[in-house]
Length: 207
Image (tube, helix red, strand yellow):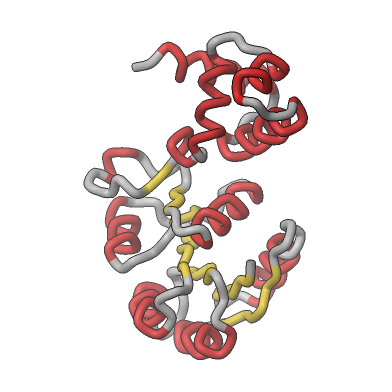
């Protein structure tokens, strides 16, 4: 996956580049310090995703988002912001953003958001509450952000199935189940197996 970073702070861009390039098979193809530069470099490099800060001097990130959607319709845009209020989130989604990540998010969340956006899905930080997103069914948070197979595995864990039993049920290897478990924990922000099991049991029990 090829990513363009847009933030007006040099140190922030440097930190984001190091973080993003630590993700497997992800490359930062360009950096931009303004909305205008973001559009120019996106046209030049045609990245899979743009990580775009909303708060910049001059033209806003929203204006850049509008132009990016017109100039590079195949490029997904993930908004990165210190704001998580309904106005900012709704405005970003209405303008075609594929993700909204708050700046205090964990590093793993940024990777999830970028990969979701590049694959045509929408990811929103868990800090963005559900009432803010009524009408945006394509937006996924928490368990909803998991692919169908991982939700299936999480349901099975909640039903008390072991990794070996789940592997047998689904016709996959135990190693594959464990890989899915690790990705589920990463997506849900679980620090240990106990937290994962608590969420799994709640999901299995239903509303």
